[in-house]
Length: 461
Image 1: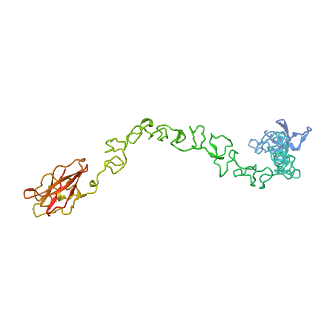
Image 2 (image 1 turned 180 degrees about the vertical axis):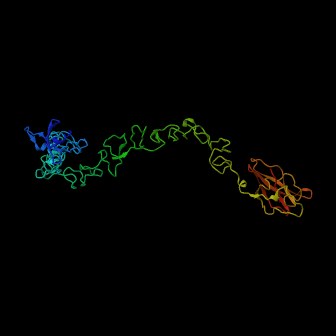
């Protein structure tokens, strides 16, 4: 509304906004006071429904003064700061007369939802939590009205259906064994040996004992994950004697891998690497007939030591037994005789037949060989020469050589003659020696020489 000028400013004016009469009155500062009047219950104006707003006169530059309606609870419009506004003063609906949402504990009974509302949180009076009327059996003791309230309507538990204390009633959990109680440990812990029903724990009662049980699924089914093993609830496992459905193919109650049910509770088969007693002769998991293995079908052994057949190149002998010391050891390798093992090595560089430094230089003799077994090894050589060396060879004056050929392995120990050459005579001195072929080398039984400056020579094979 634009204010008039001059003579109009002192006059009261009226207008209607939204069906409500606003009456204008002059103010001290020259503005106009607008009064909003709402209808009363009898049709007359009510002071409670009246708010005022003031317009400010223009400054003379032609601008208008603003008019802002004031907020009011109960006008049906939810204004800032109001939780609701249902345009009534009914405190039994969801919006109270102070424009707050109805809640349990506000002191007003919400029709259709609350049985009572005493405006407090006490559960010992006539209206309990949730705004329900207090009744016997609700689990809350109504002070001055009920003697007890255990939350049920059962008799014989200390509190009868009328919430009166029962006398001489057996109470499970009081620590005293009474009436039909089988146990009473004074607590309601269902993981110990006495349940809160005063009966001993048992497999299948649905409570897992903290010490003696691994599980308890409250059923007698022994094909699931929890089974009754000798009265105790244990987790199902291979070998417990119960066939775990969907997990095991067999379970004979043991972990023996030589019977019909082996390994992870699966039936025994040829190729599982377990020899089934009375059914299979062998089972190496491959059964391809390899050395020391098993033939196909697990009905016979593959080639092996002590079968009487020499399986080259793995075996060098097979005498049908695993006894060592008879020429063929327990791994079917030919055994060497003692003389092929306990020998003394002769390996001096100046012992070789090709060594010759002339007279008066290196002059040695074998005065301590003493009929012991010897083996020639490099760098001296590996055998005795079969022809007489020149004088002064082998680091001596009269070099020794062997007269005769070298024997085969099967020939065993053979006698031979050692000759010592001197001044053109190839056999100035002779000695009887023994020779044995050890397969990879030869050994010689050499007596001590009769004169000094005689020495056994060595040569390459």
